[in-house]
Amino acid sequence: MSLRPTRLHSIALAATLVLPLWLLHARAFADLFIVLTDLLFLAACAGTADWRWLRRPWLVIALLWWGWEVICSIPGFGSSGPAGLVQALVLVRLILFAAALEQFVLSDARARHFAWVALALSCLWIGLESWQQILTGRNLFGDHRWPDGSLTGPFWRPRAGAPYAHLLFPALLPALAWLIGRKQPLWRISLFLLVVGMATVILIGQRMPTLLALLGLAVAALFLRQLRGAALGALALGAVLIAATPLVSPPTYHKLVIHFAQQMDHFAASPYGELYTSAHAMIMQSPWHGYGFNGFRDLCPQPQFRTGIPALNIPPTALALGACNIHPHNFYLQAATDSGLPGLALFTALNAAWLLALGRGLWRNPAPLRVGLFIGVLTYAWPLASTDSFATLPMAGWLFMMAGLGLAASGSAEPERLYHDPPLQSDASHG
Image 1 (cartoon, rainbow, N blue to C red):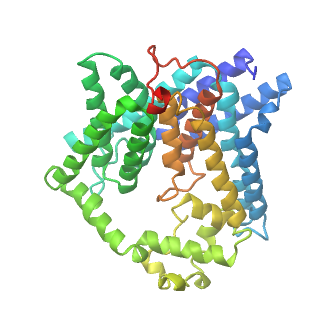
Image 2: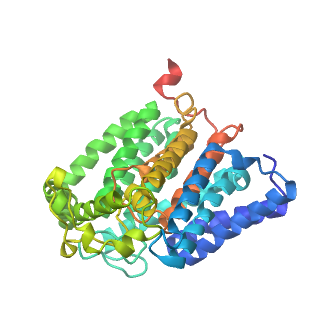
Image 3: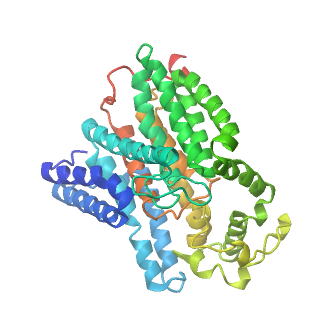
């Protein structure tokens, strides 16, 4: 599309490039800059009378999901009244933001390069602050480790792991591609960076980010043949680090190994198991339209949802064991409790459409940035995960920025320009 009135594009690009700063440290400003980018995009569309982007398959699915979420949140269907309806309505800002990045803001390679730099610097900032906390006991702002041993990175509470794990491969793979294409000792630096990146997510001490980073490492090695040796080395050294955590960082060992094993042994009785069982009971009692935006938060404590799952011999849940929270800590269960099984189907289709678009052509030409962004969205959309609320910043901001950048890179006919050498090739490209 030729949606590039210069002034509107420049302002929208500037708003996008500073967005990661606000996602890190000022969520209210992040929302403002997302809305600003949306409005500039719509103004550009109106100025050129070009609305063809509305036919994009992923966007059609996203708008159908959003529309059903809104319908299910109408007072009478939804449990949160007018406030829930308003929150459902403003979800569209995130969908428009991804479309704006794909079709307008990041439509050229130079803009995409700057967006990658912004994401990479954000990942680096989280990593550096985590290491500062390891080495000095506190971060730049004076915050110590969380009482359970988790590193907080540049934040005051333990929320460094999730953004770091999602951003790690989009940030790291283009740099590794450049280094691997060089002779030693630069090639060895790529192994060092990968090991440090994986070690950081382990030492942050949050279980799900560690597992998602391992998933990302496996997918990166699948697509990028030249990365496989470094990936195996990083995996081996990561296993050594986990084995050494009783000496290096006892709180990390207790949380990543001991506590995780205990939760898996008695998952149904764990807080996550209780949440998921409560969500299942709610879905079964309103399978077609759910309970609207924030329905889980509002209605979960009611006694009719303490049924357990008799078919699986899972006993009734108990509020004292953590059966309820502000959301069910899983995107797919949240989609189903918000808008029933139709909403779950549309939400699942949206994630599949994103991944299909981001993965198009990757097996033949696995450009490192595109592989990294595919991994970033895949780890976010992975169904077997404990998560934040889907629509909540900052995490939703990272997702939609990565998705928009990935869609822009996937749909562009321009060559990859993050590095000057030919991109890394998978085995399929040589067959």
